[in-house]
Image (tube, rainbow, N blue to C red; front, side):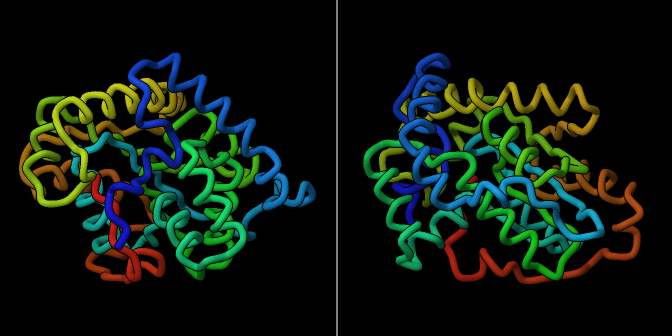
Length: 262
């Protein structure tokens, strides 16, 4: 039911802008317009509440449309037993539940506004705190520096691993246009615009985590299994995953929603 016409990108960044400055200006405008909504959803006293006593293992997965990160997320979750969280799925679930917050989110999206980072992070925080898992994979987040700053401020935790699936633009365009899923209006022009916006908004996030020594850049060209061979050593190097191979958990979020392809 949830086709790419309501995809993740317009929820966190504008898909109609073709330049970095315009995309960033729209981000600031969207946050201002959604300020009262964010304040309503997030009690100021709860803005910086710590997670569980034992810090969770958090993985961020980044990559542009057509980078193949969605498929790799599935393999990581199946192999290492992380709980798969998607900011887009969380927002869509909130809308599907017909809650007051969901209605407000939907109206923001319909009006071309940007859902405030605090709102998305608060939904992620709720899942982190209510889950029995201690290992999480957060797919397609953070997309912007504003997302990243809000996560650090509210969750008060840093990711242990940040994966970036690096893929040439032409390869990503070809992958998206040759598959039977995606946005209804996908074509070469719209794809190039989406990739330009992704690079403008996501590159500062990638550079930030690179400077912190947390970024792992994966060459996302090749077969699914070939690419996954570059991912395996990263998780195998952590003590938490040495005995968790071949686990096949079911995500509590993705199981009831159509996964957003990447």
